[in-house]
Length: 451
Image (cartoon, one colour):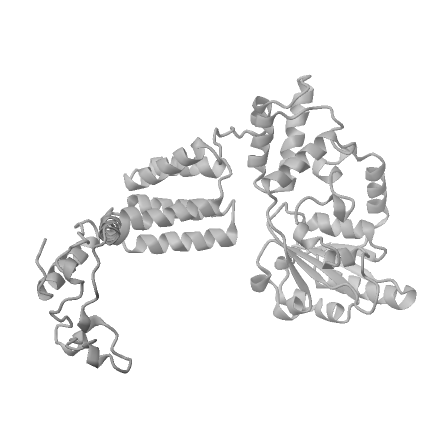
């Protein structure tokens, strides 16, 4: 709702003396140029630039927008920048506390302001995914007729949580998690800025790196942790925020792990070898270390997919499906929830029966090819669909397996040099036992020599 007398007084007092506000609030950007990250949304002529009046003139007015992204990526910040920069009437609602009645009140006020004073209204609606279909429907006439310009923020996929008519009348802007460099810039800005810590403390490299890991791309989390650690350091009379002070403050130990160094490869190797060795507890330990150190969840998911084929294979054909599903889920949800999915897949893979037969099979086949053991394709297997193929003897004498009662024809498939080669040597672990039986039966009926 529009601010009442007490809210306005509180905001005015906060502007005059911001020290009582949290650091994340004090460091909130005042202009779009101060926004950290999301540069793909802040180019000249972008919807957000037009909303703050930069390029909003002419017959094409600013569009309503949906800001979709993880927590701490700047959705609320961008809305507040608009509220400070625009000369339009700005109203803020939260879907957590507001309902249809409050929405209609804002819309009625917007129509009066437009008709009576020619004043446009920007409505910022936070957590719009919490609105029911009926509540979202109440916004349609106002957005369609541009009685209000809507800025709606959500952490959930709008294609699933927002009604199509409302989405089709707006632009969808996707916010990305802040990069490590974005968070680092934000922390250093907060250390020296007059609105922040005013240069009272320094931030050593190891402490800064741990703060970046803690943040996980969330600016609010980074500044909250920095403020807590800074308060503890000042209470101790220190001039820098040590790693020990930060760990005491946030109750989160720094993981010794360099994502670009030896630790990255050593811990990743230990994770895969623990899965291969069926030690589910060790595998979860190494997974936790990598998650806590801020490892890219997509990297972890890729390693699990490789493990599913390399070390499990047909001993549990579902392992690869689980790993692929985990990778897809991780790409959609990200941290922190992705940790649950990665745990799910890691446990399944660690406890699955193991076989590297698929790995050794393709390795042996590739080795022969690289040695030059190939030879021409047998004539009866060659393409016979083009004119003249029969004269060359191509596809002549080929036996169609589906014409036989057992569905298998005793004919040569491999080149002459490899006709008795056996690459796949299945184990009898788990589900691969039935593949072992199948291989033995098919090789016999193909007239192949048994290895």
